Length: 68
Image 1 (tube, rainbow, N blue to C red):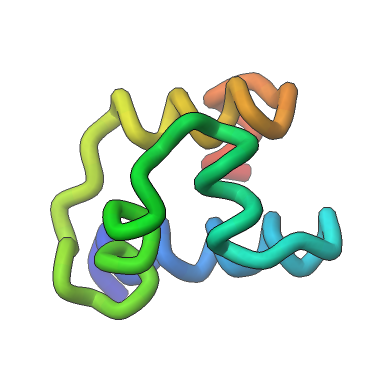
Image 2: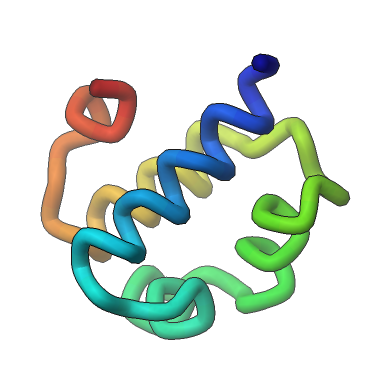
């Protein structure tokens, strides 16, 4: 598994745990829906730390917890 795949799976897991869609996550986090959709679809396998930080901020979690 590469980093892009791990980030994709973690985002999907967080959405499932919070009972929200990827598009709802994008709205909550202030991220373009296309950005998250590209990550989930595998078209973007080099997610930036900035994007992960926005996801964490939107879900009110620390960035270290994203990687647990």
